[in-house]
Image 1 (tube, helix red, strand yellow):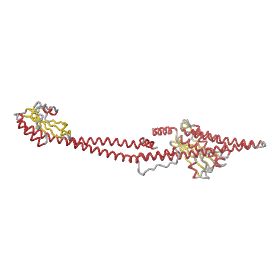
Image 2: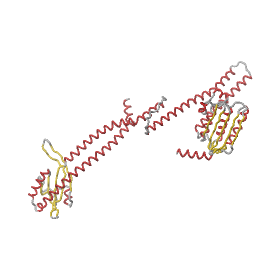
Image 3: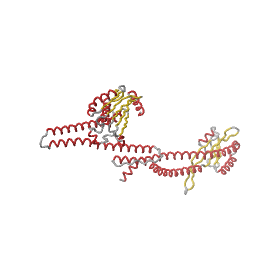
Image 4: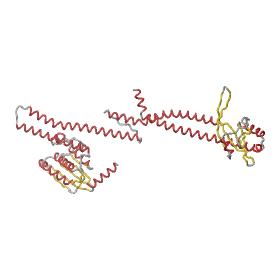
Length: 498
């Protein structure tokens, strides 16, 4: 368990965030460390070399005449005193680089090999270089290394370069300063690194809390537990807040969809069970009847046939809704004369209306061309008109009209039937929703007719509105874009999606 947690931490975003933060800070600290050290080094060395150059050139100028006269003793006395005063070592070499005077009197007659000496003897005005030498103290302290700078200036007499002065001075103090500073910066960098690790852990925790909360909620959804919205701070407009808001919206939609699905399954099961139960009761009554009664048998078989018709209509509507949910396989779009479709649908419903002594008045504009599926539009008109017939009492009146206005076709179906209560209007397009369930079943409806109408209208890029008053009738208004305008609407929608 412990190992699993450790492995989980090392593979987590928090660990990656800390590592990334550490890498960035390490690179920055190293860069600033090197930059500051180099800057200080340049400043100190430049200042020291400039000071030593003045002293070297002073020695060169003062010994020029004596060196031309080969007055070695005078030169030795001078450079010894000068070197002792400045805590430096002064060498005087001839034009070949051979030491003629050494303030320490240890390398007289030795040829100098340093590049800076060669540079000056070959015509340079001034040159310098750094060298590391080992100093042997005694058996107790052992040897010690230190850094020296060799400043070289030419000895010129009567315009002729006759030798060179080598001014050797320790720069170990500068090296020590830079070393101490570098160590201090490294120690500080370690301290800063520890602070970065700690702070980055808390920063990562703060930044990743919304993601972890989302993860927990998603896990809860996958385990079908109750999902609570992710908390969002007011005024926070960060990307994580946007993600949390999108997740909350998705959760609400999923819960709504799941609730609708459960209700749909429950209602569908109930609607399917009702005719099956009726058929079972009727069939068992016939099977268990001791005496055959032809009239009763015909009546029961007629009832069974009616329930089969109801069941077939319900299954057909369910299959149609399933097909329309897929959209791409449900429709075949073409230019359709909506007026012709309406006349054909009304012709097939005239006998049903006459059976209830209901009159249907039609005012149809036969120039309304829409882009749509002929069969689905026919079903839309049929369902709306059939719904009006079902809920209009005998002797009632229905008016169906079709007209074009500006860029759309308007289809209206109005009746003077029982109407719809105000509180039910917002739900009449829900699947299996009935205002009066008992009366709706008596009318033979499946509870899916208006849902199918709504789906058809929506998938044709249209809208449907309902106006109703209890006891005074209902008006359905369908708006569908005309053919040319429908094509333009599709182009605009495709452009927005791209």
